[in-house]
Length: 125
Image (cartoon, rainbow, N blue to C red; front, side, top):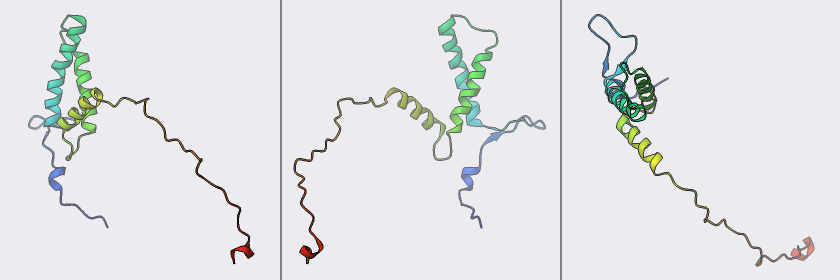
């Protein structure tokens, strides 16, 4: 028997289904639309910094924004919102731990170990 949890509020998603009478083939939450709208101009600016020209239709920027949005929202759940996923990604690539080569490994020294002769069965009694 499977028990239902009481966290139905986590299953509710604010989703734009499309214009009245015409539903879209995909269901995206409002937050995905917002992130997509923020990423397209950002990728356009990055493209401009590399080429020093604006395209009439930013096809590559839209494609990159779609891929980035879907990748970010793969890691989003009710306990981890999108802004925390982005914050974690930005801080992880900047502040990774460097491998310390000066750390010494533990050395085992057997100078205090003494080996005795084993006692026979009649000596032990």
